[in-house]
Image 1 (spheres, rainbow, N blue to C red):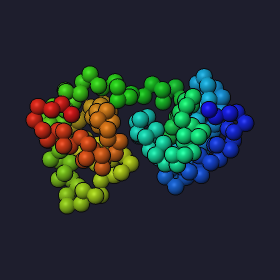
Image 2: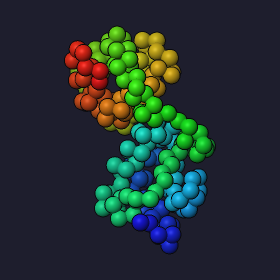
Image 3: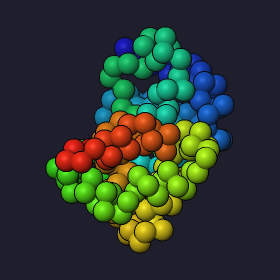
Image 4: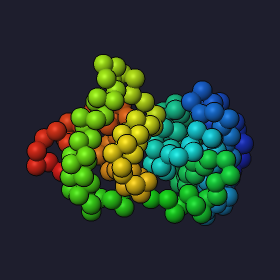
Length: 185
């Protein structure tokens, strides 16, 4: 468990680990910053438009596992904020569990929109160009077929629910499920 005497050292080390992956990143570690207990607050403009679970997923993967295990594994409340974003807004953001009960409906909507075919066509002969960090192409495809901002967000939460945190994972984790008739993602 992280001790208070280690807060500033851990914050500096986290910034060092996260800087290559997140623009203008800053880290604050302390007690009761936004929520009871030890808080780690990571702020970066990279998080703008990302969902909370995407942010956490990418942050944790940018931290060396041994550092994470030693200092951050237990008893930490994480906040990954865009500049100017407040913790209350972040805590009210939707999570994948919010769409779990609608998984079948969202899968059907994606199929009816021919999402798989459109995503693959949009990426063309270069599926390796799919984003490894966000849902840029998936969002664009869904907006182009006329989905509302709320429906696009729900689809992204559906992707997260099924193990995808970026376009590359949508291709590997979600698309194969959507291509099988009768399987609800």
